[in-house]
Amino acid sequence: MKSVDQTMTLYEKIGGEPAIAKVVDYFYELILADDTVNEFFKNTDMEKQRKHQTKFISFALGGPNQYSGFSMARAHKGMNLQPVHFNAVANHLSEALAHFEVSKPDIDQVITHVASLKDDILYK
Image (cartoon, rainbow, N blue to C red; front, side):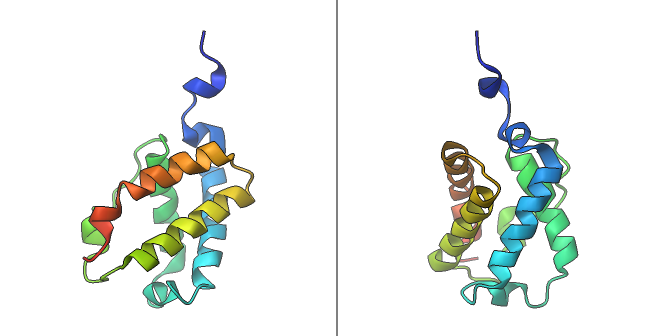
């Protein structure tokens, strides 16, 4: 018989959309403090961005599909993001998840999922 943890999605394990919203808020605090990547958000409505990112991450972690945004390639078109930018964002996401005591194996699973999107994000 499977344990409860094995049948739960990461979305459920983390605490659903309210918990993910807190992670996203902290994540953007880290992003906006980082000169490597904060320039990409200088003309961004951050309230809208936080809500959008919360829905995207919720869906990516197995939650309900409320994401109605652009594809990754379209969302990042014209930004010409480089590996240094992608890695900074992935590291900040790891830090934000760890800050809210998400387990290392679960963080690794999230980052593996994020890494699978790399080709749709870089050099656009």
